[in-house]
Amino acid sequence: MSEPGNMEPLIAVEHVTYGYEKRPVVEDVSLAIGRKDFVLVIGPNGGGKTTLLKLILGIVAPWSGTIRYHGDSGGRLGYVPQFAHFNRNFPISVFDMVLAGCLDARNYLRRYTAENIEKTKAVLANLDLYEKRRELIADLSGGQLQRVLIARALVSDPAALLLDEPTTAMDAASQTNLLDLLAGLQERMSIVTATHDPTFYAQSYRHIACLNTRLYYHERGDLDSRTLEKIYGCPVEILGHGIPHTFLASHGETEKRP
Image (tube, rainbow, N blue to C red; front, side, top):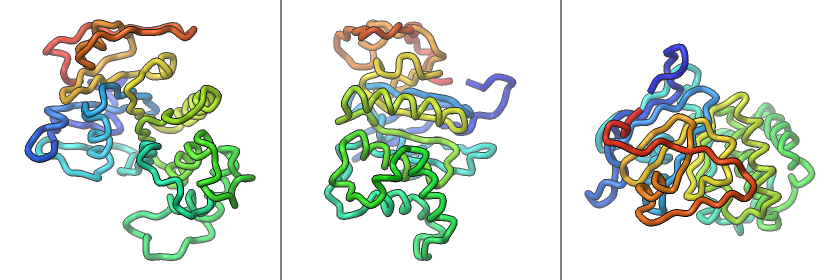
């Protein structure tokens, strides 16, 4: 799929296959991520969502296919890992945690610069975390820690922000704050969020990628139970929680790729 005006996508995943122990986890996956896009990647646990993010980030290399970064992305990507996979007992302050986001393969052996420190202060202030800068991450609430992880990803000025199940262990108020934060960030970068529960993002996403080894890509539309059953492999009931819903067209073999 191409962007309006036939512009190149920021990131193009093209016919990518990758797996573990010779078993494909993502197979022949193609996905276009546009500038200032909000792509929701949904699917069951084990369906390949985290693996797809790792492929885009370059943490693992595809068995086949290519991943291309166009325009102003320069491969500059911010990553917020799954909350459950993060060791929150690591003895580090909020400030040092976010400052560590300034490190990359080119400067990880160098000392932090004055610019790094000022940028960290600015990001903390923008995310209402500056007053928490001296606290240990172990003393934060789930919502506060998630914002620290996002701040760490933002301090490098990424062109796209990738989040893996970002609402895990967050209460309702923290989830709402996160959604407001992502809406603001989308004004200057692309957002890719992997989740097994799309309800929370019903009013936010622009495109949706349904992934369970194979990927089905959609424009914004209506999300119905029949569509989700194909991905999750079991009956699915959509609950409103006061949020107007959108639907997706039914999947077909011709819809596997953008």
